[in-house]
Image 1: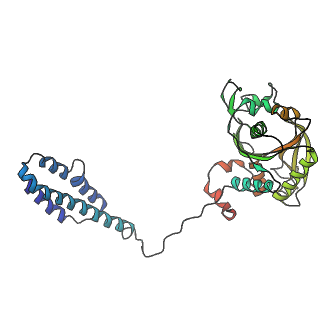
Image 2: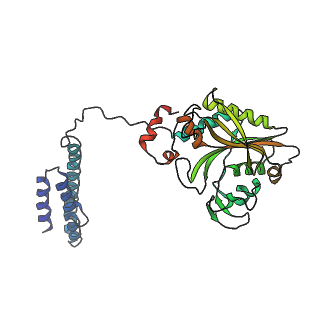
Image 3: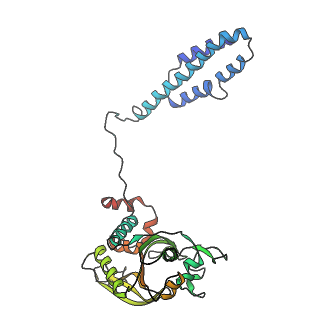
Length: 345
């Protein structure tokens, strides 16, 4: 009885010749599926006598191999047909090349910033994006009532703890604190990284962005050193014709403090929406490191002095590539990113 079934189904398999996908799938299910004919025959085979098993075992294995090889051969034929004849493709034509990707504009500018400061002897330092209150605020001379500690500006993760609240860092200044705590002057480093602030998303603001902060601490460091360092950076980044100006400002961790503007690279100083028709764009904050910050990090403020600065990579990139809406940086729009193929480095 079992031998007759095998003979019958062998003839059916040999007669099957179509390579159409739908019918081929029916063939697979009928013969090779978990509830298919081969499975049933093997179940029946378990009940035959030992004498019959010696004879039928070889026949059954040949039958199974026949079904599998038939299915595989027709499947390959079906793939070739669907890729060629049925879709009207000429398989002798050369294939389409892979499209070369491009660096993200923020990555390009970050790399350029790092290279510029490397020429001045600045190394790159990094730190965690989740910070405690001490490294993010207290060590940097932020008073308890400072608005930056409010939930409106900071994404807090956990309240309280040995070193205060835990939050997503609001600036990479926390890396400066960690560097000064764990080493001895002189320090000359920049700290690129992502930071987070609880702000409404618009063309000029986002809840996360990228910063590069810098720190130089040594004996006899002056504000003149700071100005010359930043002036060199601007000339290298935007060209020798770019104008620079410093305006007095306030930051808890620097004293004196300033904001640095450059002539708008989009309108060339004539006035546009991006520069609010002033001809100037603020690109960074800077100042001399407050002696309290040095002392908080275990550095003798009477012997050492230093300067610090911080800039948003998005703002630098806006001016570098004349991009007016920083939301484009995080939308993953291929049409936008393709514009930077020529700047692949």
